[in-house]
Length: 463
Ligand code: UDX
Ligand code: UDX
Ligand code: ADP
Image (cartoon, rainbow, N blue to C red; front, side, top):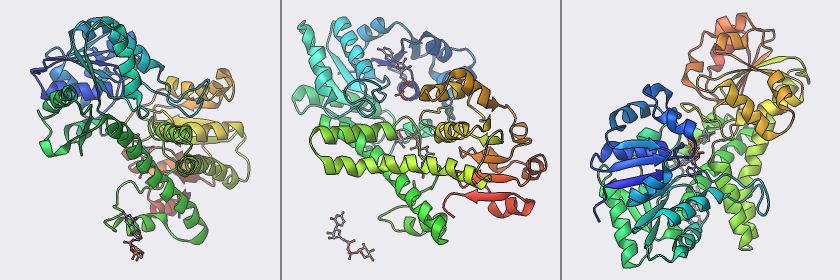
């Protein structure tokens, strides 16, 4: 089948960048990204590509190149479904906040709505691709909804999980480690797989395109995220032991990373991992394991989350303890709010939990983040439902200027590893702070010797 029209439902962190890169590399394919959120679609269509809703280095240029040529953003969901041969589902699958599996299972209501919409609209055969991370065997549910209309339209369901990391989305999409496509072992299934392989082959070399059955593909995505998160919890567990014993976690990470069986990446001790995927996917894995009665498997993976929660709490506790057991009415400056550098995404960011703990201790939090708005910061805190919106707003001051955010502060906490933090004039910051001036480096990015030389009391993770 020659693919000429693709549609993607969901214009978020996954759908937007992925479709932009497909459109850029497949000028012969018309790519339409649809979303129910009108504001988001308007932003994607903003003449000034600085205003597109997702900040990713290099994305604005790709959107500028392809948009209007063969890349379109629209709210006309039905029309796009009707015209497309391949439909990607890229909607959000948050952890359930109600009912059975609350706090653990993935909420599939948005996925189901998409499936029902496709079933209603489709008049000819379609390939439906799961792009969002989904629990194993979701394809089965999608298939049964799609086939329920009985109008003779044939659907093939593929699983094609996205492995991009935020902040490096464009590079990851242009140069993926692998593309994973799972599909049915039937002849029709294999044809559908081939159609999607042909799309990616426009810019990805064939040896990097891996095809499997649907379940392996779905489970590989959860497994990859669980392994990555586990590495962080493992090194964070060692960071606490390092602090007690006089070892330095950076040295330990370097030493073990040189073992080619371990590898050097993803071994940075930190205030804790965040992001929309790791916690959600592991909770989901734990839920699936439990639902099959695999309690040891469930407990094993749950420990990764328990360790991560501990690491965040340990960081805020240490700030309180170091500031003479009280932070009441003290100004604590946060450098960074995003869950990692080079993104404006804040989902599950450690900063949210650390701020929440410190506000419980009556601290005043002054936040500077180069890409995150005050509105977002307040809505992140409100989402925890710890206190009223008014109280949150009264405890958080935000600044567009890092130097002002640190003025008169008792302590600075580094929550995100933005490059610019390293290059600040730290003497200037020190001069305007309360003394003793404390720095709690949750990302181990600042120069300890330089800061101590200036007069700071400097504490990093794991040393
Ligand atoms: C992750 C996976 O990397 C990606 O493959 C998947 O598709 C989605 O989930 P993402 O959440 O965007 O991507 O970012 P990632 O770089 O994995 O970082 C996740 C969190 O771990 C961040 O909070 C980051 O700061 C933290 N982290 C990462 C560490 O604390 N230490 C490390 O060594 C690496
Ligand atoms: C290990 C470390 O590899 C080595 O660096 C250290 O110095 C001593 O301990 P060893 O116990 O000799 O070495 O063998 P290793 O190859 O690590 O295997 C240990 C066990 O793990 C074996 O039973 C092996 O069969 C098993 N294993 C290893 C697996 O089950 N799966 C794997 O992928 C790798
Ligand atoms: P991700 O990180 O997985 O991309 P996001 O929350 O950034 O998640 O994006 C998901 C997008 O999907 C949101 O913009 C949301 O409005 C959109 N969406 C959810 N359900 C539907 C639906 N039924 N039809 C169209 N768009 C949807």
